[in-house]
View 1 (cartoon, chains in turn orange, purple):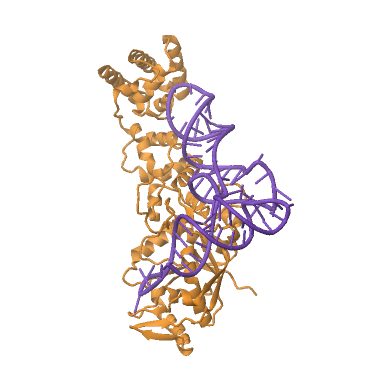
View 2: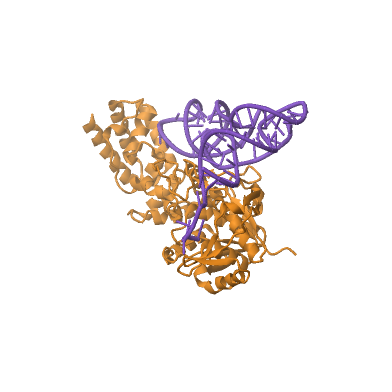
Length: 441
RNA sequence: GGCCCCAUCGUCUAAUGGUUAGGACGUCAGCUUUUCAAGCUGAAAACAGGAGUUCGAUUCUCCUUGGGGCUACCA
């Protein structure tokens, strides 16, 4: 009978959760779900000096945020007796020796071929003569990664080891340990590395920073920047894996249904944040206004203003932000009078005189509109009529009104802004603009 | 240096022993138009090179080149 699938994500809490770790965790988690298996979170905290509880929490928080749930949780630091027990097995077989305070595993010497049968890469052949003896216990009495990792995978009945390709070269040593301990070797799947734009391993920070495409290693940075979990799932899943159809957007549940190891790429994948931005933008636009408002809230707490106005502003900018952290800048002018150069009021195809005329005409007709009629369709109709009646071009009226209200070169349309800001504030800003225009020409 | 892995548009990738080598991001252009964004339409853009196998290779093999990883009492 086939053993029940059991996989694990085994980070060492010596630093915050990083982007590559999240993808490894995701692949493991999805594989477990797809195969009715168990997913274990195992902290490899054998490095006493560098392991910290804050990092553990950071890792757990990041996984939870992604929607990744684990069935069991372990700490290697609490399993010393287990490693000792397994060490005794090797001792009984006379496969270890002490040297310089450490405990070593003696590798078979003569040209022993070791085959790593990888689910993604096929058979990879190594030769034992290319490796040094493996340290099993350090001088301070704690087990090394190689030993604790293998022992735990045996002890926890891990069936599939899905991890980064950087571990491929370590795997023959691990296989030797499995064999020496008389244990079944699990199936291995070494997934391609996530790369910097310069193709170096991303978990090592790129030396020459500054590239706009370079992503952050620290996963928390993405949460703070306002990326959505569903976007990260899509993006990370497609870094080294691709769906069987051409649908680029899918939920975690759909991913579970589609995911197979044979669709995992062998080559490393460059992390391109523009792709992530696009995916995030897609999901952001898909949100209902209520959800969007809830998502935006934590990012705009420093902005003071009428709740109703803020909600109107959010509605107008929803399709503009790629990340939630861009929102404050996009809605700021709704909440306080914008600062801008008076020359900006003049449309490129217009003149100062025409602009002044347009602004004056707009002010006059807008002032005449009753508060109750202050709605987008009515505003549009009135301004259209004004353009025609005064013999002006649309750009003589709409452009300066828009700038008067937003102070920006790009913004939602003037009628949307007028409707959102309300009559009093709109009139005030247009008057300010008329003054600015006069003094700037 | 040694060992190992990898190689399709700039990037993520699909597909195939015979295809106009497909999609997405990005880029560019057009539409719309009062701007920008969004949206829609379109365009440019790839099989690293060389041998071999084959009627036929981007696909299979080998070599070269290039990139990456590992070579810790870090994990």
